Image (cartoon, rainbow, N blue to C red):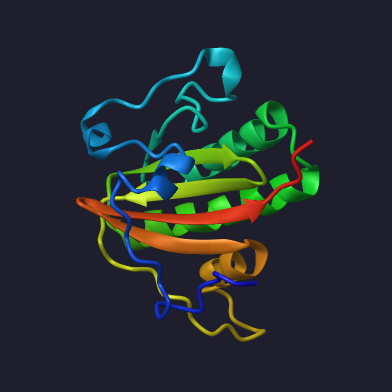
Length: 179
């Protein structure tokens, strides 16, 4: 699959927020950092934290937030976007891995979760204030940890890291069948 990252070599370069590719994904411009994320009505998501399909949802950087991120991902992919259970299950696993990395390795107090959809693709982003880059490490069969980015690499169609003025966005994309 072309466009796949094999570690930090080949890492996609950060795109300015005014980039046409960013516009295709509905990524807001530079002023968006100062605006609060839009909130959805309470019935749109299983948690009262907001809807990551409408804007970035901020969550506290602690292990319990992984469960909230998984529920939000499942609610959007199954409930709002009516995607297949298999795709939703894979995306939920990958979100859990990216959130786990943000919680364990960044020292951040919060992280952001955002989901975007365009024809034939979904994109899920976990944003944190650290500019430390994640690293895809070789994984052995008996390894008990370090499998997060390995799974992201194997189960997504594309993934990468965009450096931001304050932090980074680690993301993955998956092809979907539009009906």
